[in-house]
Image 1 (cartoon, helix red, strand yellow):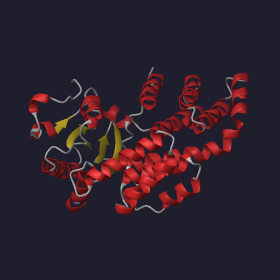
Image 2 (tube, one colour):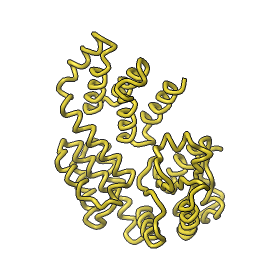
Image 3 (cartoon, helix red, strand yellow):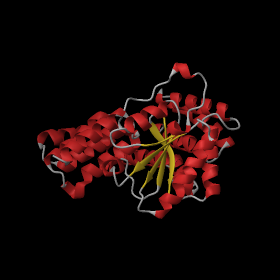
Image 4 (cartoon, one colour):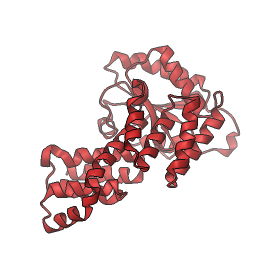
Length: 311
């Protein structure tokens, strides 16, 4: 299936209901979710016909998607028919719901929420898309904060994220962004305190979990960053010293050498997939989570990892 594109001939008409709810497979996931979320947030329902909670949740997701009148799309993924996709996105229990925007997961939950809680969840999504009260200013501020953080200005980004949280304390985008700001400035204690203060449903959102992983990796990196030259020398002297290469990868990631860090771990896996109870693979998955599932390096890295593991 080709990526979703805008049809200028349609004017401002709302999408038809059959366009708002669809089933995706491993072959169509990129077009139906990653690409499509660049235009409209996509709610992804990972489900199985074998579990009754999934059968209870899916009709409610369809109901609230219809009520959004084109502001959101719903994509359903049957994990029984697409196990590799579920494994790649680390779906550990179902039903699981991820929300993708601009090609990356930004929110989500697991389990079948009661209808009133699900309505609250969708109301928040509507607000973030600019369809709810103050939504337009909220989404604009989030975009400004993200641009500032990506532009190596975490101080400005932190001010913007804090402004959002003053108005909406459980905004998961702002929480995750503020944690990453603290990580970028080396204020790990403040980032940890913020994460520890969160309500469970905010803390469990995928975008917040990814920020937590970024903090954990940064904390690990503090211990090894100063030893980067030593780890490099040890790895060159003895390619079979997997612990030195593992420590090198951690230090590289903390120093912003993300591509080199991924390659260091892949090199361990090339030589010994099972080393230290698959420590290299597990650390690599943490790298991918911290980067974001749609990050080009994470996408390429997952492809390389799959090749190494299944050949």
